[in-house]
View 1: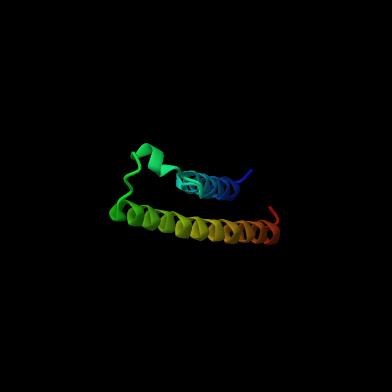
View 2 (view 1 turned 120 degrees about the vertical axis):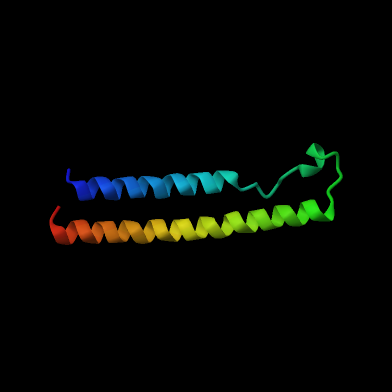
Length: 83
């Protein structure tokens, strides 16, 4: 196993961990926030939750696309270098 394979493996591992973390930080579609806050959902709390969910959703897409593109690049490099 060469140094290039180790570096590619570490980068792929970081991408995978980033995807897992971002997905786990997202809230489900059936969140019961009324139970936790005593039913007092304010306008500010609703909009803040939406902005955080939108941010996490956007980054999930960005990281996933980066992961897939990097996997394709790694496979192409390994194929053409003969490793």
